Image (tube, rainbow, N blue to C red; front, side, top):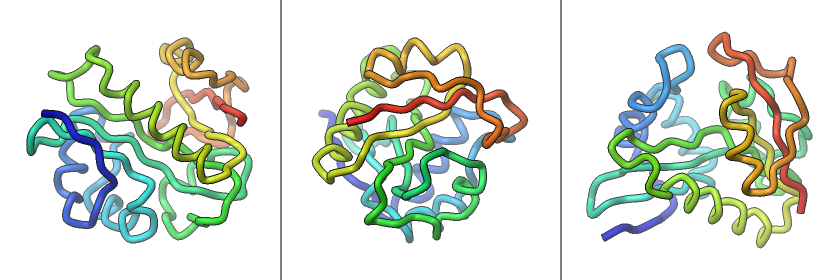
Length: 162
């Protein structure tokens, strides 16, 4: 049975384990970073479980800043619950559950919640191979961003306006 819920600090180790399965070390957040993020914006994590096993999650904080920057990954205290923009930092699905709609379901809920909260939209960065995927949710590619070089990769900023 699959369930979706927001995170708590007790989910830190499970979240970090999923992240480590999904991203190379240079891009993956650590358990300590997730602890800080959970202390600041646990309600902006959506976790998908298969029975008691965490199989996917999405997260990101809210800000009045218009663009996603590398500093946001490092400083969870930048979260502003009254912010206009919902950032989407990570979309993670463990390999055994990919291509089953897990990420899409979580992204859909993330978008719905941001809209219900009165945000202006959702902003994310992705690698070029995922641009078309995010366009299916209504995100618009704003091009290669100089504001994020996270993990030494080239990132494209995408925005979904409500």
